[in-house]
View (cartoon, rainbow, N blue to C red):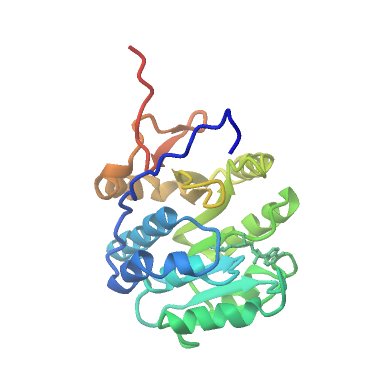
Length: 265
Ligand SMILES: C[S@@+](CC[C@H](N)C(=O)[O-])C[C@H]1O[C@@H](n2cnc3c(N)ncnc32)[C@H](O)[C@@H]1O
């Protein structure tokens, strides 16, 4: 440590939302951190609870992910699904080496998820279509689509179109690594997408845990926004940052482990 660096303070582990699915909560408490990956545990708790809200609303269907990697986030979501619903893990499965596919499958098995519940698919998302994705899932529907693949503007634009076409009316699209210092231009792609898709809106921002476990945006169809937000104000109360996010003119919730405001007087 250099002379001008301040010694680190250890922050107490802060509680994350419970998903209401016991197997998912057990995995998040002891397991998530041991599966190599990047998605935040806080975001997984929030998204798992959003799947439970979908159960309340009667929104059923599968989970799909572009960029499944070793399965960290997908395993949590798969444990929140109802019987018969499946998790589709799409990835090129070549990075950092081709054995990543075996590690994905082994991690799923270790956490109680067999081929009846998880479908790995070795695919470049830029080369496929929504109907091909749905065909992997007995024609869908998909109720949550996590986009966490290639972080270029053109790849995100394509993945967003794919997810929008594949996700059902009441479904949610979750975008990883938003507002990340390493990918500052991805937000431009999201803004362009929102302008092209006036039927879509940002439901909430899930604040980052660390620079790796980065911020996610959750998108929904505009006519579902109020229904989700009303319940989210109740179930996520301890994690709501009071000022919210201004998408000019749309406002949405910011969920954070740190809900402090600046002290101004
Ligand atoms: C940041 S990692 C994903 C982390 C994972 N979602 C988690 O929660 O731990 C990004 C993944 O996207 C995959 N990827 C990159 N480009 C892709 C593409 N065009 N199609 C499918 N997957 C891609 C990479 O192989 C890598 O495994």
